[in-house]
Image (cartoon, rainbow, N blue to C red; front, top):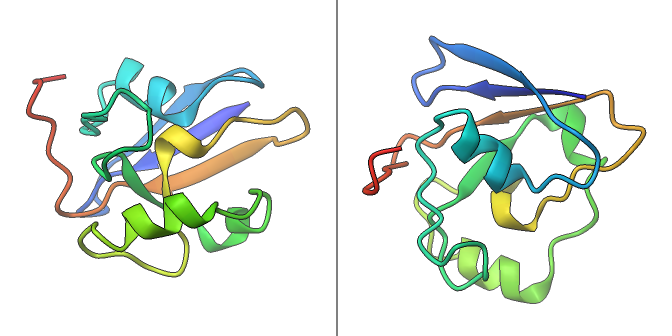
Length: 110
């Protein structure tokens, strides 16, 4: 499946291939996106916040209450915001488009 990452300033789109069962955070980091994932996907931070494209948001299962609580701590949250560590790609999705929020920083230098 095709994953499209749109840069924070919307001037760059990177398309990468991914497989069902892949975690979006892992795909993003492997492709050099500036998502830190400080807690390594344990859902203890909000440093992997992404904004899912409106047309793709309905594909995703609802966020858990814990994920919603962590999104409350993230900057520039929108109605379609999610944590990339909580999105597991599913068979049947042809594509998924996400935008990197403007406050995204990767302090690990990926």
